[in-house]
Length: 340
Ligand code: MN
Image 1: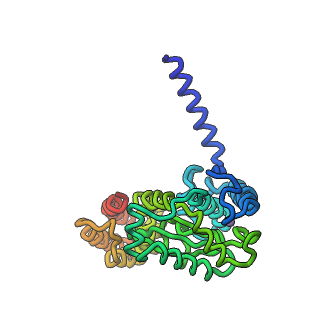
Image 2: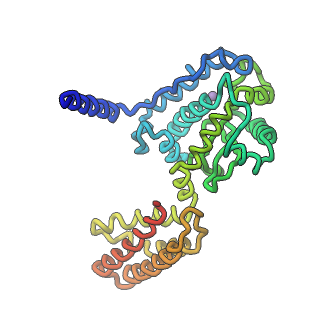
Image 3: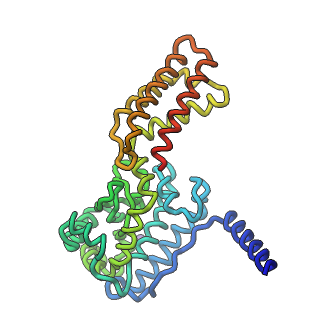
């Protein structure tokens, strides 16, 4: 008994070690055969789309070391997407390609539930009147997309639904200009490779027919998972621009100060004060609003004012250090509130 238990632990550690070293993303298993979605999506298109196009994104993502570059883990594909900000084209394209197609295969089925039910049905009726009008809007967005891209049904940080379209392999989780961020619960691939063999240039026909194989049971599951997802709060916090900007500058100038280098604080304490004032005046996102946040942000501005005074007129390192400690203490309170 104990021996088996110890062997178990040994094998478990061995597995986690291997996992930690490899950190490779893998192809999701298809829940159906390549020909199962015919006549709406033909077998040849499915086979090439899954085993060539998607596989190439996956291989290139693994080759580019995506999971290690952005500090995410192999299991955290969503975290990887969240970290994409347009500076790393390889992760953006190949990581996006892997994430987007994985979601796409999952919401398709040869035996789909044709209508949304439960919470998703209520949300669709509230916002779009009917599932039919939602589909019409998504098809219109898909037709408007010039060149290659995707059309998405997205849960926003306000927990509402919205329809957006993105070019290439971008998606709504990524931190990109002009993209309303949120968690996609349904995505339709409008690249030509998704339909050309069967529909040629008729994207509209493809869009009309694909709904025959969209499984609203799976979309409903994605919807409920998105509402509960910690990622939604992360996006909300990230959308809070003045917080993001303050946090960036704060880290930039306080890290060297902790190592005894006050040069940046002396140079940029006025900028930090401006950012703190902007943060205090900003619209606080719903999830972080509580009775303390306003007074804590006010306190933050006030201690940064003191820091600024000590750093700008006849600066003395000891005085700066003492004021910085006070700022740190107050900022810790802010972080406690926004990290809940
Ligand atoms: Mn595709």
